[in-house]
Length: 262
Ligand code: NAD
Image 1: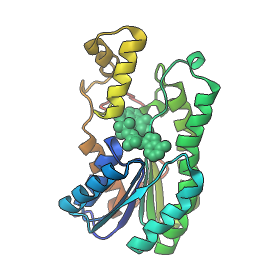
Image 2: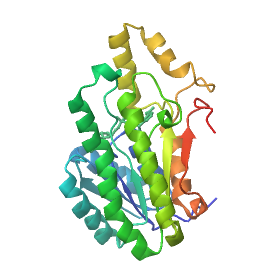
Image 3: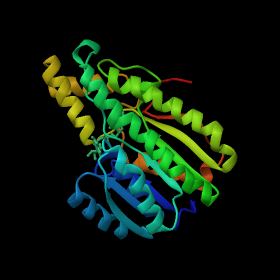
Image 4: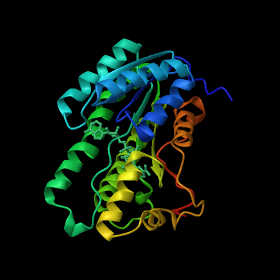
């Protein structure tokens, strides 16, 4: 199936590894122009070479720390200028610290709000005018399956991600008539560095063996396996395409059956 993404202009944030990286590669493989944003210039430069190698029409690296809000709009404008527009925005971020409610400090809440919630607000404000000018676009936010099924020790992530779902749903009703579709992707456990960090955190916090710590994440997953980031990227590419033109305001679980939510 040709997704019709050749030459479409995409920005992926927090793209240097994990789900962001896999999504950038999937968009590139469909022939899109892909800008990858993140903090590590060397990693991003190498990724740009990979994006070109798999078929990107064009590719660029954008130095971006999501916590530096004043830099976000200029970065978006620079991508749109170089690519000649902006059609697709995958709003990915790092994940916040795990832990129970009383173990999470107020400062950690403030940091998470600054690094996870507010950047997606600022970036959306910056990308929307470009999509309006282009006559359409796709915005996707990476959240968590925790928006459908609250998870132990994930109070920061699950709380803030529900705000992001609210943001996406609000944008969906404001912009669908302009062919701008806005959705959330809600990953369950995927095999990324973030998942590795979470497994190690449960081993240290709860004194678990590695297999017991993995079981904490897999026991509730009927598929009994960690997700493949490449499969996540394929769904991003499909939603980003014209095939995603009648899907908006949804929060789509990619979770091996974990949430069983409607
Ligand atoms: P990851 O930790 O492997 O990658 C996160 C990326 O975010 C890294 O490239 C990191 O450098 C970048 N990043 C962090 N803070 C940043 C900042 N201030 N500015 C710019 N870049 C920054 O994570 P992942 O597993 O790919 O997950 C991506 C998102 O999906 C996270 O928000 C995570 O909470 C969420 N998620 C992941 C899983 C999973 O199983 N992997 C499950 C549920 C939710």
